[in-house]
Image (cartoon, rainbow, N blue to C red; front, side, top):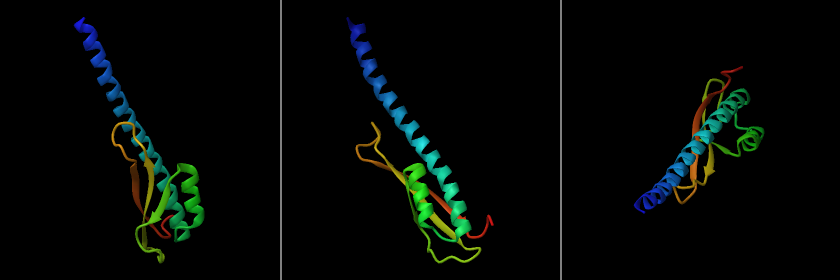
Length: 113
């Protein structure tokens, strides 16, 4: 009889561990996706010299994320522009509220040209 109780308790703990592992895997996948789209956005910002609406739309369409500038937008050739790409994620077990996953990158204007 006690082995049944132990089996039930182990299933309860196993479900929690699986949900936690699922959250970590989802957070890692979202972070990787944001990193990839940030590289593309960095290239476009470097070529255009500013954050354009087309870049914002690309980030939103490809990753479901938002992008905003951290540094000033008045940049000349050779200046650096810092930006952040973020996306909210509602985890299963890690937190009760949504978690904001963000990636911060810097582009140098005219570097890829």
